[in-house]
Amino acid sequence: MDRIIFGDNQFFAVNHISDEKSRAQSIKFKDDSAIIKTLDIARESGINTFMCTTHDRIANICDIIRNNPTKYQDFKIYPCMPYAHKYANAVTELGIPGTLKQYVPGNFLGSLFKGGVAYLSKDYISIMELLIDSEMKMFKGINTPVIFLQNVITDLLLGLGMNEFLVAYAKYVKQKYNAEPGFITMNLPKLLNVLENGGIENPIICASINKVNFRMSGGKELYEKVLSEGRCRVIAMQVLGGGAIPAGEALEYVSNLPNVESILFGASSRQNIENTVETINHHDSKKMDLKLNLSNF
Image 1: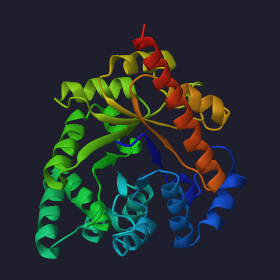
Image 2: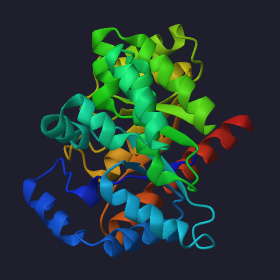
Image 3: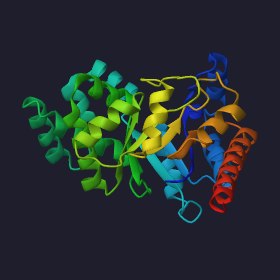
Image 4: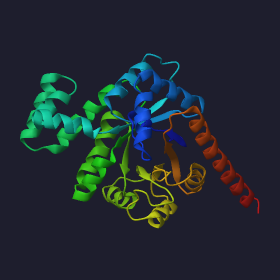
């Protein structure tokens, strides 16, 4: 995975600092061209991976990327599913059978039959597979080497002890899409234990990692212990602690943690994107110089 990954919160008015900023972002990114322009700024800054939800508007972004294969030949997308609001709204309006009918992909009759049988027999793993296929339709032809399960589902399954679903998700993503399964969570230590017990070694986990325990179940010290053990490939998100930590201080902390493979961030301006990339690269360079100096003794 790349060291720096660009996120999509700013595109869909998700801001942990203020509602006012959320509204401003909503206005700024009301057109798809504004999203593409910001992604291009990120690319110019050296970022080649975009981690995003399966929001309906992402389908438009994928269309643009597919229509410009030379320009985006090295660009990767990490889908994060499900986009919970989409399904919640559909179930409210259509019920579970109606939602399955609306989101069933591929051959209509064959897939609908599979979905209908799955629903009637309570075969929830088959339903999950159908919904994964539905979410992945928009990414056809796009390089998606890692596919993530959103924390709203990961942590729900974790809390309910439905660990077999996490394992089934991982197996299906590998078999059907030849991709690495990724998991987003607010409880890195517990999830890692569950995945290892399910036979998933060195999993890819995206988790909140910051200096102030923001959305870090178990606390910073336990997270630092897990990181020191190098048992998983970690993507650090929410490194600013919901806005509680100055950017420079936050990035210095997470950049110097052991075994954090990637840092995920979102930004809406060229200055913030470039400053973040430069700061991470600066701390990585300092860390590398320190290792080289120590190896010379």
